Image (cartoon, rainbow, N blue to C red):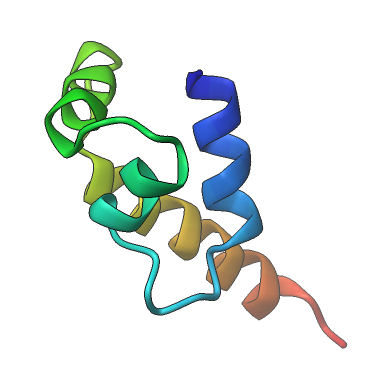
Length: 65
């Protein structure tokens, strides 16, 4: 399930409507369960999404094109 969630987030990083609630809804799980899954990995949902977005920004800024 986490692999599916991670893939979904990566595919939708540019969507400003990508919220923990939207992620939970897309995977037919409760928001509470989504937070529990991320907590077990040592992350928050919003924090993990933010880190992925920052990775993309760093990559874009490092690209000379």
